[in-house]
Image 1: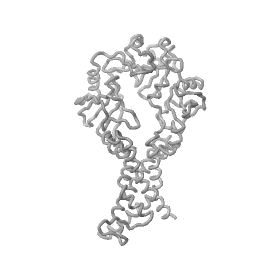
Image 2: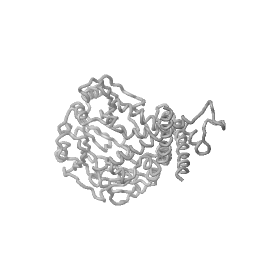
Image 3: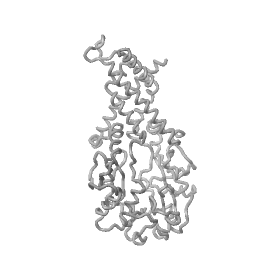
Image 4: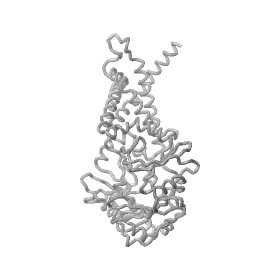
Length: 478
């Protein structure tokens, strides 16, 4: 067995050496970009930014009922989303079908709106409170910031610069007139040092989602094996009791010693960072979906027919002083309209008494084959509902089921909206990815800058390993 063990050990050393040479520069890039991403995320339009740019609803111009709008859009089921808002000076119904299709119907005369010109897009952008001197920058199909498939139903875009100090640019859909995305000069600069290299987010590659996913899986997979073999080699070569002739626990000198000793201190962190990054791509679909299915949402609504069930005059009477949007939905067979107000919380029209009980009763329909075992109102954050780069709504109602996946749903108790679905695999993902990759432990997040200090320290240890690996790898190649 001794010759076999010796041969396997040699292959272990050689495997780590060449995997390290192939991936060590990527490790440096990942650690540096990861620190940048702690403070600058990839550009996106937040819900608060979207709502702030909505003009006040021109009720006097709304003549079309929601049912008529659904008919004009050719909807045979109640859609995923039905909203009444403004397209510059014109009230419109915005409909998102279950297949993702987008429809815009004029609430003034019922005509379908299939396109928006540059002049209208500029007027829409001028409604944004950040606008100073808006100017059009032309039309684009896809760029670095709008590369993902989520924007496919809205392409192409009118790109508008707002002329503000932050260098904000808005992407206004040439199909629907919606603002789909905003970017600032700070985001555009720092993301070239952050998310783009970290996620290997180059436009030609990321535009091909399946290819990009395979590339990230294979690259991060090889990197994880390289990190794991390095930790193994480091433990095999260390001597604590019977030290080397120099008196050191390591046989190496110079950069190699930094690599060895750094790996002993931060090697486990390095392995968990890279392995959790690999898991973030959900290999083999090990982790379940985090959104409710269409069937779940339709059971929760209790209605599938394309009708709203509410009179516009009734909604207008219940409206706040300056409404900007109305969202139509159903809850356990009861119609409702959720009005977004310029100031203050949303107004629900026309919810019956005993709203909390009705939400729980509707929630039972989400999984009819399982029993709802618990409904808890969370007034504070916990390990599975917390804010980190994304603000969570509170209070929130958590309902749990006894199905084989031990599913939870989070529901807004004020509006009845389902905010998320969490099953056993999702909770495992929270600990296997988020906890190990972002260190988003609640006791650290609630005591910032403690979280920043810990992640900076771990990243510094990873950089010592990575930079020393680049140096000794280059020397080996040379």
